[in-house]
Length: 141
Image 1 (tube, rainbow, N blue to C red):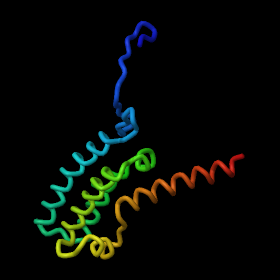
Image 2 (cartoon, rainbow, N blue to C red; image 1 turned 180 degrees about the vertical axis):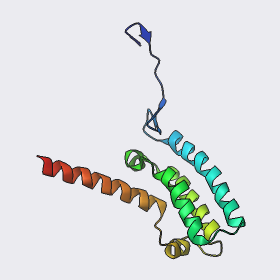
Image 3 (cartoon, helix red, strand yellow; image 1 turned 60 degrees about the horizontal axis):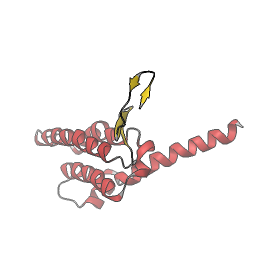
Image 4 (cartoon, helix red, strand yellow; image 1 turned 180 degrees about the horizontal axis):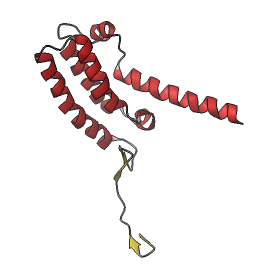
């Protein structure tokens, strides 16, 4: 395609505001990118555990350095994820909670840490965001 004497070739994926958007809206590359980014941070979390950080500080590390990365712009992509990608992201949280409480099973760890499953957390973020939009739209007319 040529626009104003500039040749533009089609792309199957592009990064926009930190989110990889592919031509099928599967967000596979975005999830791959998140997992790569988060795995290095999970490694740092393990190191902090070995030097004796307590559970509360590990939870703070997880929330601020890992969960925040995963949840960035989730309102734009989470509802389009397939079950496989949702499970891949959940696995990150499962690993992090195991670092915090290695003796407990995942549902017990979530209860002790007062956390929800990651997919529920991301769904709630999206739901809240779209309800705000709906509410604002209703009041502005």
